[in-house]
Each structure stands twice: as C-alpha cells, then as structure tokens.
Amino acid sequence: MATAAECLLDAYSRVRESVRTALDDVPEDRLAEPPVPGANTIAWLVWHLTRILDDHTAKAFGREQVWTSGGWYERFALPFPPEAHGYGHSFDDVLAVRVGRGDLLGYHDAVQAAAAEILREVRDDDLDRVVDDSWDPPVTLAVRLVSVADDIAQHAGQVGYAAGILSRA
Image 1 (spheres, one colour):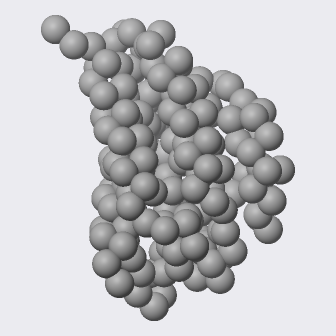
Image 2 (cartoon, helix red, strand yellow):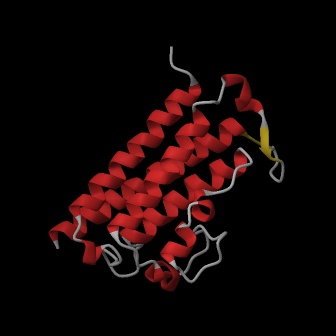
Image 3 (cartoon, helix red, strand yellow):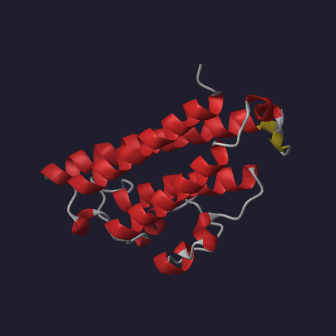
C-alpha cells in the first residue's frame, strides 16, 4: 500500500510533466505573452506555481528555499523581493516575469527535486504536525502538502490551457 507521501510525490511529479509538456509546446518568445488580454502568462504561472511549491514545502520543513539557496532569485532578476511568490500580484507584476524556458525548467526541476527529497522522509505519523498556527484551526503538515498539490495542479492546468491557446494562435 502506498504511503501518503508517495501519493503526494506522484501528484507533484504529474505537475512537473504538465509543466514540461506545456513549455515544450509554446515558442519561447510567447512565454511572457498573455494568451488573452489581462490573463496570466505562462512564464508567470510556472514561476508562481514553482514558488508556491518551494516556499510552502521549505517552510513546512524548516529548510531554506531553493529560490534563494540555489541562486534562482539572482538569476531571474525579477523586480520583487525574494519572499514574493505571486499572491497579490498585479497584471503589471505578471508581465514583469520574463524568463526563458531553460530557467523556468531549471528552477522547477530543482524545486521538484528538493520537495521529493523532503517527502521521501515523511512518515504518515508526521502528517499531524502543526506547521502554521496562525490559522484557526492550525494547519497541519497534511493540510499544507495537500493544499500545495491542489494549488500547483490548478496552475499547471492553467499553463496547459494557455499553452494550447498560444501554440495555435
């Protein structure tokens, strides 16, 4: 029988596959182009979903984010502070994310690898641990990891949809 961590690893890896497929389908010069006026770009969506996976898993396990430890913050050179992950961004902020396919995939792969390393050590008994007591009820590790899976899967779906539009337009 699969453990909860193995199920989450599978869910996260499916997002990785979706991101790779979508990025392969769209010309690089269109990654920062909204598929329709006012919509999020593929570059922003991939950056954002990767930042959420990085930020939330690192915080839940008391680790430094790959964004800063791996030099991605400097490499992307975005006009945001290092702790930014996209929540509350304006459309102008979305348009500011102009990053090439290689860097998007590199950062995403590095974060997926870090998350997988962490998750391989998670035991079902760990899932009840409170990781954020600023909510009522407090957020457990299980809730946080499922929330991340849901968020990144939804954004990966948006990436695929946007890629479909941009690859045909």
